[in-house]
Image (cartoon, rainbow, N blue to C red):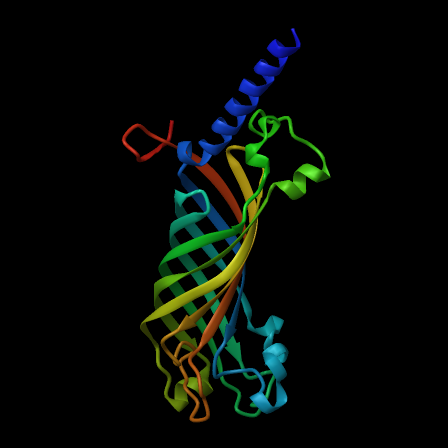
Length: 249
């Protein structure tokens, strides 16, 4: 009798592990929406490097706006994803605080950013290998910590931007917009809440190939413009159909 119970438990364990390992294959596609603040670092606003160690003084509410982010993610393997990202955002730059208050420049920037991003999960959650999680019965703080993923990402994107400036900036001679390339780099964490839904936080910088996103380039500038997104995300997992494409049923 004991042998029979042991055999049943062993087969149950093997089935559970096998089912958990196949979860990412059964749901390779994920739809993700993100929303949060945007932070811009250009030639308008901010302090000079001699007054601003590590750039910490440039993080200010005056330069903060928002972004909306839509993604379609595909799991190449359990710890590697590829995602198509589409972002609309507003950026802002103003000389009201920093090393050039007397100059009085201000610009508002609208951007649209398509990007192709690769993600690597350097810490994978343990919850997906739990039978209770798959059945929606896992609870408690220990389960919470076992349900966290941590990942790093980078990729390549394009940036279409449009600039509106105040009278002083326009009179100086303002660039009204254009298109450039950007490199996104960042990290994120995801709470694997259920087999269908995840919630997360992601922070990522965009390093642009332009020094003109705010419509102005200073003669003292030594680097291109940079902006950041802090996104709170919701993920919905889509079933993989027999043809390998996402199923919406």
